[in-house]
Structure formats: C-alpha cells, structure tokens
Amino acid sequence: MQRKQPAATDRTMTVDGVMLRLAHPIDLAQEWIGEREILKQLLACWLVIDPKDLPLSPRITGHPGSPPAKVGVPITDISAGLLAANGVLCAYIHALRTGQGQMVDTSLMEAGISYTIWESSGYFADGDIPGPLGSAHRVAAPYQALRTKDGYINIGAATQPTWEQFCRAIGKDELITDPRFKMPGDRKKREVELAELLEQILAQETTSHWMDLLDKAGVVAGPIYNMEQVYQDPQVQARDMLVDLED
Image 1 (cartoon, rainbow, N blue to C red):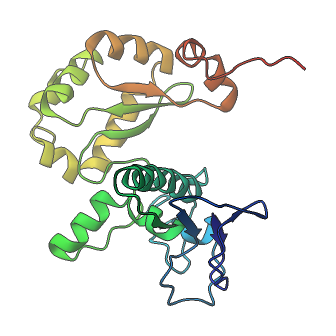
Image 2: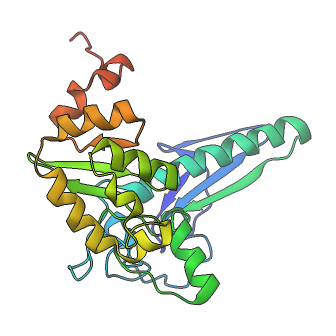
C-alpha cells in the first residue's frame, strides 16, 4: 500500500515498513492527484483538492458572492479511501478467479471530481460554469435550508406533489396556484424570491413545530444539528452510532 505525494515514485508494496509477500499481490496507490501527474510540483492536501479557489478545485461550495469555502469534512480523503477499498475488493475477487494480481490506483482529485454530478452534466451539456449556491439545489427549488424562528430547517420539496403537500402543511394553499411558483421550472427560476417568502412564513414558528407538521404531511424535511444534537437524536442512538467503551 502506498500513500504518496506527487514526488514519490517507488513501487514498494509495504505496510508500516513490512514487505507484503502475497501469492497474487494487489498493489494499492492512493495519491493526491493520480498516478499520471502533470502538476507534480503541486503539494496537494484536502484543503487544495476540496472546492476552494485553488488549483484543481472548482468553486461550487459556499454562497454566491462569498469567498471560497471548503466542505466541512475531509470528503476527498474519505471518498478516495472508500474507492480504494472497493477497488481492492474487486481486485481480490479477480485474483481468486484468475490468479492474477492487479494495481489499484486512486487519488483525492478524482474522488472529488466524481461528486460533481450536476455541475459536470451542466458544463458538458451547454458549457455552463456553475457557481456556489449555498444550501440550494442545482436544479430544484425549494430544496435548501430555510430560516425558522429558532434556527434552520432543510426542506426537500423538489417534486410537484411534494411541493403541494408542503404548501398545505404550512397553511399556504394559495402558493400552489400562484403563477410565480406554479411549476418546478417557475420555482427554480424564482428560487431567491421563493426562499425569502418561505422564510417569512417559517420564521413565525420553531423548527420543531414545522418538523411535526411536515413529518405528518410526508414532506422531506430535517433540522440542522450541532454535534451535541447529532448524538442526542433518537435515530442516531437507535443505530448505535455512539458506543460506550470500558477503560
């Protein structure tokens, strides 16, 4: 296994300095920008590879008009590791079937680019250069965090039926027939205006109040937690995400 900066070139297969002797070796290289580096002088890390205004980093994270912002967690490191693990498993299955070892090559750069589903699609379709949208969705609205009386709530009313359920749940049936927001394309075109209008409504009650109403209506919604609230959530506790260990 190799975890290399661009300048490293050795192909020794070691783990913690111990040579692995396998009948069908699987050589894993997890690197910054890939095995065929062009920018070899670039010392990469999560901060560079993630969406900031730096080399290899598309500016799609943050709010419109704001300085570059990085993702809150080291997503490219984690994703490159997951891709590497899947690749190793596939190579192992291949070795069991054929007796042949393989080279598995992943990088933080490729892991990051793989997430640009909407952004790359739009660029290749019509040359559109996407920018940051805050918490909004690239093609649907309302699909974002909206302010309430005591915080924020994530709303996922992307489809027409869900939008209508949402309007009824918050007591604003008239929005369903409002010509400004009648169809999905209308809502996306006026998403800023729509978000401001919805926040005026949602700011009248607490997040928990709206969560109760939206949950009963079957509308996709969720609160925005701090880390303490994350581990206090009943679903997180039910899934044993926090386990007490004896000293």
